[in-house]
Amino acid sequence: MASSRTGRPPAPRASGRSATPRTPGENPVRRLVLRARRAWDRPLTAYYLILGGSVLITVLGLVMVYSASQIKALQLSLPGSYFFRKQFLAAVLGAVLLLIASRMPSKLHRALAYPILAGSVFLMVLVQVPGIGMSVNGNQNWISIVGPFQLQPSEFGKLALVLWGADLLARKQDKRLLTQWKHMLVPLVPAAFLLLGLIMLGGDMGTAIILTAILFGLLWLAGAPTRLFVGVLAVAALIGALLIKTSSNRMARLACIGATDPGPNDQCWQAVHGIYALASGGLFGSGLGASVEKWGQLPEAHTDFIFAVTGEELGLAGTLSVLALFAALGYAGIRVAGRTEDPFVRYAAGGVTTWITAQAVINIGAVLGLLPIAGVPLPLFSYGGSALLPTMFAIGLLIAFAREDPAARAALAMRQPRFGRKRAGGSGRNRSPRSWNTMRRRAPARSSGER
Image 1 (cartoon, rainbow, N blue to C red):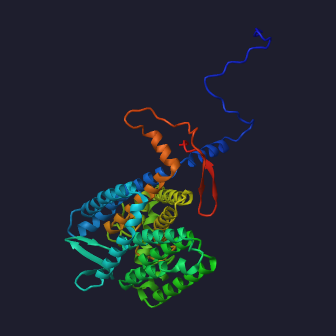
Image 2: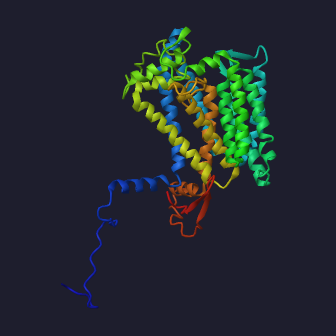
Image 3: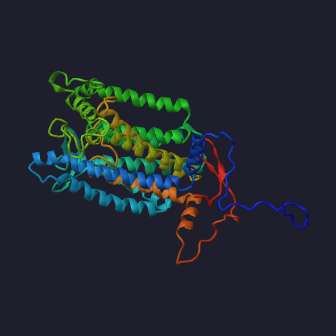
């Protein structure tokens, strides 16, 4: 064997590929899991999950609205694409709101909190004025705008509570006032009860439940003591029980949980036919547009029970895909809230995530027969412009917060060179490591150049 001048044997040549040392007998599944965890932990993961997940849910929702609403439109002597065109217009307007919200700084979001809250309260008061408010399906929660277009102000009340509550708690945290229970509750809880009272005047308990969930989400993020949290929860549960007990309609909905028969006077007709639609879908469904239940058997097929039509036409694969998209969106929102050092971003991101997740759980739970029918739409998916517009603005908030992450901002800057110049700062050599606050713990430092 040839030797070098030092008398040592020559070093072996390095192969073209850098071989990763592998432990003999290492499980390939474990390697795959480790790679997935590394990819999942990159700075831009939350940004892409929020953007991609919301777009996919909205597009799939448009397809299902077109499929589920055709029969209803024809029954009303309208064109088959009538509801789809209205939803598509709302989606275009919502996309504009999403883009605007995603490019706005947090200071401007905070400045909009009080105007949005005041506007929502004013519109909800107008709903109760005779001649202005409209009753739909027994709920006095609508305002007629122009022709067939209607507005439900309570949907904007959700966005108002998130922004105003996040700004309020952030300012109190900066002044170190959240250690006192009175500052944690006042004026957040009275303002939330004002919104809830205006909503319940119209009889819309489903939207009231979502606002209550947002309130509890904000209190939890603010670090409310267990006794205080349980006390507010007990008061809310008592009020809810009284409202249900004093309404025969709500008691009937509660009795339809898990029903397999329409019952006397067909009081569980909608719940049972929702189960029929899901059961007839099978693994891959009967095909897009081939639903049977939407032909007059299933009420609200394109709004509250669009998930049932999805299960009938796209099968178990379609419904699991929708659930996976909402789960990814919820995880990304929690990640944004947990990794920020800005209190307003943490409260607002947590409030939006609570809003969308709670509403999706209540809607899907009602379709599956696990929860009473609350009359709330599936976020980004069901027909309804009043629900779609504020929800897409809220998604824009999450995107803006995800972009404000220093590591995500650096990664985006590296992917977008300006004016044709070469990318700089990719090594991250001169950058100091940062640590990130989670909602309850500290996260390890990461290189800002990681993507």
